[in-house]
Length: 292
Image (tube, rainbow, N blue to C red):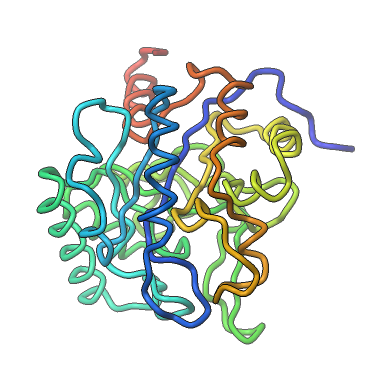
């Protein structure tokens, strides 16, 4: 029997990973940040749409210190210290001392640049772990948004790198020893929304660009979660050519025009959009019996 479709429109969180370009030659370039991100942020701000910016520590200097000033629309998050291609960026493959060093350094860079500490975290390649959550608690973070339900990654088809199957879809406080289960951690886990049409992949800006607005709306209709965490990347905000040093699928998943995003906002209405700050507040209100 097919999944039941939602009758109530969910709240949508446009959550942007601000990171180096996704290149196959491993060069560190920031075309997405320099050319694409300002256009998309202008569109979101003109529409008064709340959103997240999860900033990678290695590109902090590429962002204006004013990007979080004034309007209160952007929630500030960390996307770790570096985002190298492949296994090297997986936090769950690193020792606790290395995790502590990288997250502390990333946090300090972001605080120095923007004048305040990030409250939210997303691990590169969704590679959070119990150790990562513990370090985030010590550093004063309030949420993690690294779990992608249904995601499973194996190296050489045998070595398990990541397994988020059976993870909850809605926000929860994870167990200190088993982060896919609800428990007593102070950190709120806000899972990235999986694409119901592409198992193990996020429902994100790349799919919106490639499949179009109607397909994206149909995907949302199949979801049963309270929130849709729409994952975007700065490098998806420019128009890559096939001869550029990127994976073959990247040009189809990228566009310099925010037209599709504007169409999504128009379809759902601006009141249906939230950011991580607002999700935290709503979850806390419900926990104390205030429906919000």
